[in-house]
Length: 428
Image (cartoon, rainbow, N blue to C red; front, side, top):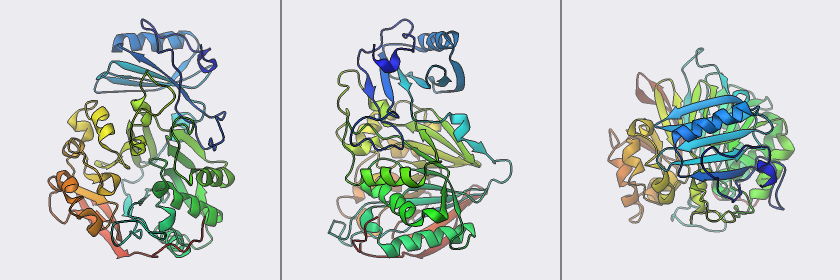
């Protein structure tokens, strides 16, 4: 028995896989090897809901306390505290249970906070980044990257990703921090509250802006929480600036709460609820514990549905078809249905099953109109465009745009030019 499962009872009725899978840690830098935050997973196959419930009962009889439970579409998700922190979940479609020894997260109840009764308002911003004008790459440009900012009802911000380093010249990052001050009504030098920074996956074009903003402007940022789920570097190597990202957030955000996202969690931040529909843990198979099972690292992107009042946004990160094949069968169309969809992977791949399930009348595409409408990319956008309630209901990241939901409608409140162009080799 692996040391991380010595204090965890055996699964009732079925033998768990003999393999132990390192599913990565939290904020610590694991490039040099495993850390004391690394989390471990065992997989049980061929089980059912009755056996799952019997196992949870067995855990509680052994001294574990159930701190969270959620049931959706026949799937069951449970957080427990005891000799160690456990997150256990059953997926009915595949008759599988995953048992995770989570050594990096705070309890879900400690991470969440609720101000939804105070105000339903929120402002959603798709922040403009500079994309290569030829939809390619150069020493100073790239054709990917994204940054979204949500101002919550308590005037704190939910930050989603951050853009590539090539999109983060000093001028560009000055524009970002100035924009954040402006929408929160804080003066330069005053603290901006970041309720949570959510990184979809460990590719440079999704976390470098976060790292540079914190490195340059930590005196003006109070980052209260981080939320992500990256696979272990020992299982799948992350992108080139991963080490800098981890070192910066550890240096300047030591007091931030961390939550390793797990499928089935429901997180509350002020007046916004976040339902985690997929993480890379869903892709774990019993046959090979030493390699990430999917071909494309983009499939480590979390899929999270954000709901504010009665309106929702589906955050897809760079989700690709391998993920789609796993997760599209797990939930009913009602779970997928959203008002707005973040178009996945900058419109570089098909999601011909997920987009119709999401069926969003509005879309946010993290690329330019040119990049999205090249001959090779336009067919990939077709399933999104079919769902739009009007052709103009799609926004692009060549300009900064903002909107609110009001009376079930998407109301644009801002559109302004991008700040910054080519990269200036200024580093972090």
